[in-house]
Length: 123
Image (cartoon, rainbow, N blue to C red):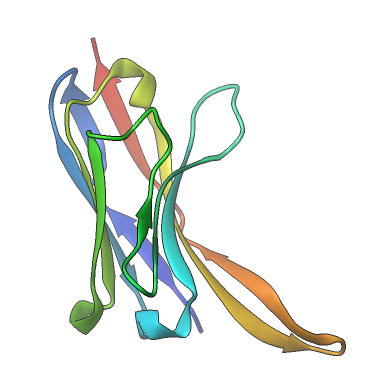
């Protein structure tokens, strides 16, 4: 089974930092990319960071310069370092792994998700 387990969330004051971890049960090489998403009240889940197999990273504008995604392949772990946190960063953060699986019509993309870790930023 593929399991993703997030940790590191909590309560922090505005301007503070947190580091989230995502431990994966199998090698990260099995996936095309790893990512972090968040869900805030009243909003759809949104991408906050991703990293490809090549190591290329991508961030939306609202976290650039504040969030950094990284990976440790030896530990099957992906990290999200969050600095200069703002109250609007409050939400549940989910780890995501995207790979490919066989189907009757060929290979298709498959997403795997963790249970999430909650981040609360107070003003």
